[in-house]
Amino acid sequence: MEIVPLEKQHDQERFNSNTPLLDEYIKKQASQDVKRDLSACYVLQDNEGIVLAYYTLSSNSIQREGLPVELLKKLRLPPNYQNLPAIMLGRLAVDLKHKGKGYGKFLLQDAFEKCLLAADAIGSLAIIVDPIDDSAAAFYKKYGFIHLESSSRMFIPMKTIRELINS
Image (cartoon, one colour):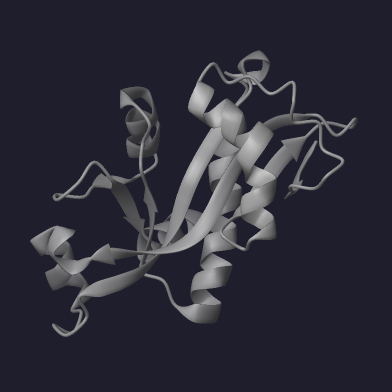
């Protein structure tokens, strides 16, 4: 098994996470978003090219006023930065047949590594997610994501990710 960019030969049709929005995305929209440079999609594939899990990344931003005051003080960001650069982890899903095997954590770690490389190249303050439900929010919270005060979004600073990876 390996994580690779989504390509035409991947078998997406059998993917079933039991979340219709995530299933329809990988089957019908992901390839188009990749072609249009709207997102990057990475899949965990088996030896036959069957998609076992996937995630997407795209550029985004965080409104300064949505960040916790303590974090703003800690980061010492200049006051003229109202929209802060971030990377959106748009979707992360694991096929039902493969849940409980640690693939979600494996994908998240891979996303962290890719995001750090991107942040080093172009600058990005954090990764943001829009959890689809309470279960997804609990998953992200377990790995250090914090709720943004002004929305249902969650984020994790790149500084925290660097500390996690280097520890």
